[in-house]
Length: 146
Image (cartoon, rainbow, N blue to C red; front, side, top):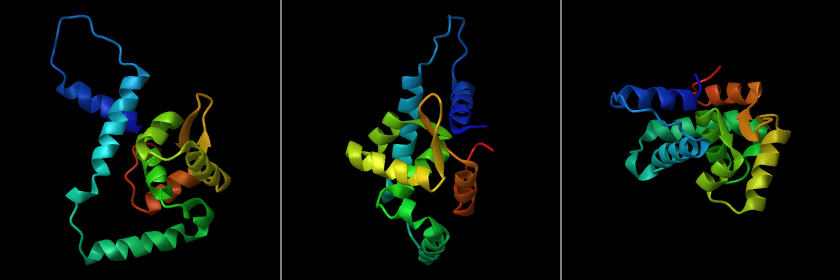
């Protein structure tokens, strides 16, 4: 189950039962929910660190080493994590979340495409390749899709 489907299921579980006609949720609403949830995760001030976190960071660095060209940019891991959590994400939505200039964002995406970690779908969304999914699992990202 993808991140969007999981989010939709959680929202449906808490939605009040109503006899009124239901409204369709637009893709913009879903994108906004994804941005809000990921922004909350990126609020790093709420996390405490310990020595184990440093060791995990070192381990992640060693796992990412073969993909140095894709992860050499400061925001690359944040971009990769966001794609992994969302399953598929609109490029404009992702850029809004990352808040980088367009040229810098395009360079980040291009490097990950060249490293065969992500691809652009026919709907112009960005998704992980099989290798990208495998990498996400190896670095400990809980992904909601196969």
